Length: 266
Image 1 (tube, rainbow, N blue to C red):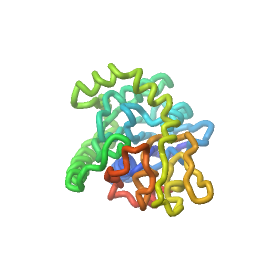
Image 2: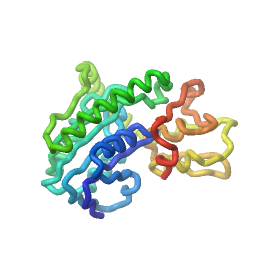
Image 3: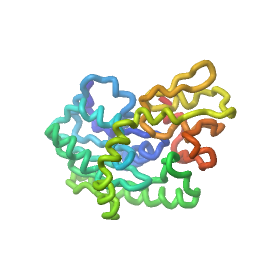
Image 4: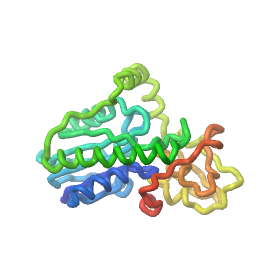
């Protein structure tokens, strides 16, 4: 596969990273948006465009596993301007440094890296914030998008951003073995998903899963242990029938209000 145009590749579960990719493109106007899930089956991906953007959510201060897979397949022209944007609800720590190291191992320079705080969607740890708080976060996102797009438009180099709180980075370094273990077993964490009697077999979870990890056994979903923990299935279940362990039953769901569910369906 060849990517000949200026392109933003993105991975998004509940819509935050898709919103950022779309907002970047609405300012620059000449980029093509490409969902990473749609090209994961490609054996090799050659990037020949003048610019490549990588937009993704931060998961346990790490890159999504699907993004790591895609990076191994990319063959990026040395003259291509590469920028990355990591969205985060919690602490992103040094996630962009991790991305930069992976690209460097392939002989690719990450020209600029940015962090954008978005409403948290980690229902495995907490419920959604209030609408008022979400709207304030979206306003800050719009403001930062304008700053980022100006740098991208001028093809300027910009040092990878880190968490504003140094303690986030220190904690990440201190517990790196623990989080590495979590990421090593991430695909299997879907064993804690289950559905209650509210499930009516609508199959939205199957269609919205970005990695085709959910199949139906008659009228109930089955998770097939290729989970990215993006939370799309549990957040968008229209009847809140999907649960994870015993922790999510009373937690408020989060769905990005600026993204239509149709945009997230495979």
